[in-house]
Amino acid sequence: MKKCLYCNDEINGRIDKLFCVPSCKSAYHYNKHKEKTQTRFVVIDKQLKLNRRLLQHFNQAGKSTIRKEKLLQAGFDPKYFTHYWKNRAGDVYLFCYEYGYLRKIEHGIKKYVLVTWQDYMGK
Image (tube, rainbow, N blue to C red):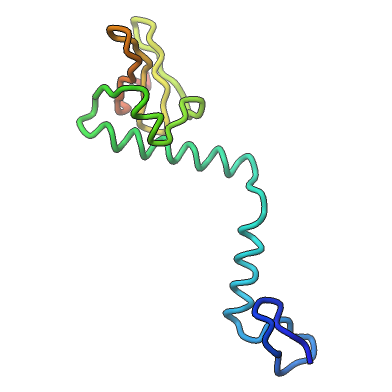
């Protein structure tokens, strides 16, 4: 008698069945898919979404300043951003979707100025 590929129980029914119950089939394919290495696209997309979530979390007021280490410890990676905006002073703000950040050093302390995208930035 054939055994289930997932739980090793005996299979009843059709001769070509591979799983004893639908939940075993689902669990088997879920685990098989989970083991696959993630594509570069998936890794980048996950990091962009995490960056956006962190920028949103630390910037409740629309504009704020945070120490660089605090943001990095939370999982932020400044290498991943969706676009940038350059102001008249020449400062380049990097954005993850609608939340942006500017690297700044104040009194020898590395910080990020966090902003939210405004309509005037698109012009």
